[in-house]
Image 1 (cartoon, one colour):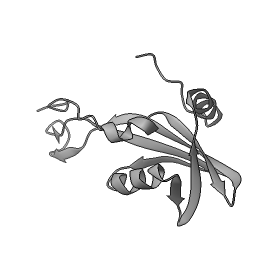
Image 2 (cartoon, rainbow, N blue to C red):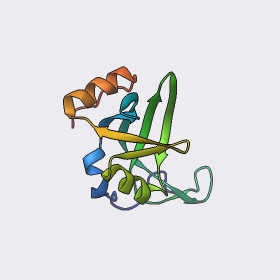
Image 3 (tube, rainbow, N blue to C red):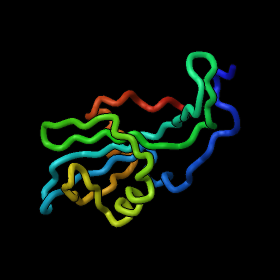
Image 4 (spheres, one colour):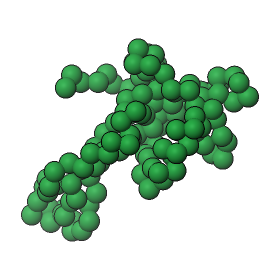
Length: 126
């Protein structure tokens, strides 16, 4: 009757450059939005229900907070499409609702400002 995942957390070093990092989203050279990639560890349930759950070890994942114009798209998870998203980000692109935005990743200070602007709770000290 495990309540907690079994096994060691699975670290994904591919997401390290984007962990708790913000980006400016541009369309035709003009900034139209912001992206914040918030690191978290997700756990997948593989079976059972209530207290008879079977859980996989925690895995690194990113929760995307996107603001384009007046529209906030929150809690967009990078999951099965992680490989494609990472390849896009490496070439400076984010595709959202079939629109391809230029994605310029920001430094730590600017990322913290975007985090506050989007209303994401501050990082806890590690």
